[in-house]
Length: 213
Image 1 (cartoon, rainbow, N blue to C red):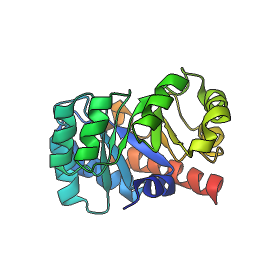
Image 2 (image 1 turned 180 degrees about the horizontal axis):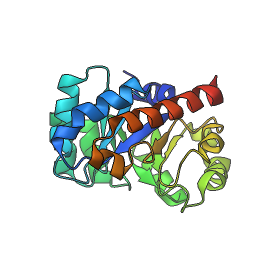
Image 3 (image 1 turned 180 degrees about the vertical axis):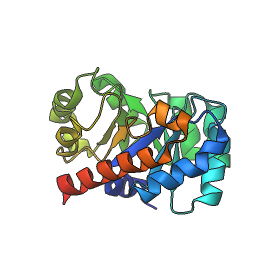
Image 4 (image 1 turned 30 degrees about the vertical axis):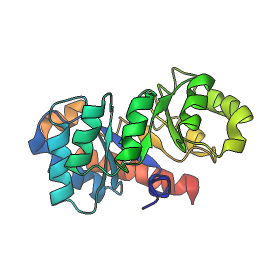
């Protein structure tokens, strides 16, 4: 599996915070039914690893990655749970090396030219641009590409990306996909309103199709 191709086909990756493992399977089914089958379950809660394992077992159509990886221990837990890719908000060479050893495709976070240079030196082909809007948005990415386009680097902007600006991001060829927190609103998840989440996923999936054809 070429994870960059998989992420590119999806276009929008739901960034998910799961507090209760019981929500994992119905949430994943709602997202897949809405047309988004690549999911990022963040390690912001103790439920993350269990949620990933349950989704892998019960929703085979879903391609599940782990987000907010801040330690080697979290990366190992993600791999053990069945995550097929990992994402971090920052660049940590120790975690990047561990991901290589674990054969887990990994996307570290960067916000500056120096961080991007370090990620490329560590062998990373794709980086998470975070926090995207606060760090300069599409304009900043284009400025970075002015110097780094020849490297072939690909971007996954996350943070402040939503329906109002997703087209601007996905229109840049080097932006493979965006991370979207708006697709799984906290209140909808807490209320078990998976129908609303499916509708938001379908809206995002339709938009990706319109943008990329």
